[in-house]
Length: 66
Image (cartoon, rainbow, N blue to C red; front, side, top):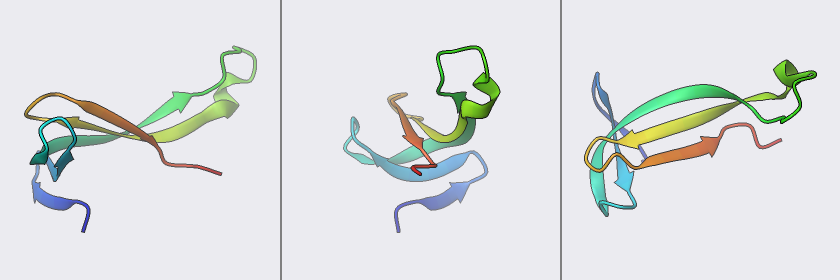
């Protein structure tokens, strides 16, 4: 299993910088992918953002790869 719930503050995941399983804060953000202001609201996509609680490395993954 890739992620394991650890407690209410985050999940335990492998951190590439720490090279270990560490506690991560996980959130979902809507990000605008268009640089044009016109119709920018139609170019928002969800991203999974994880932050290592040990080294503060942030990893961002687009959730919709259509």
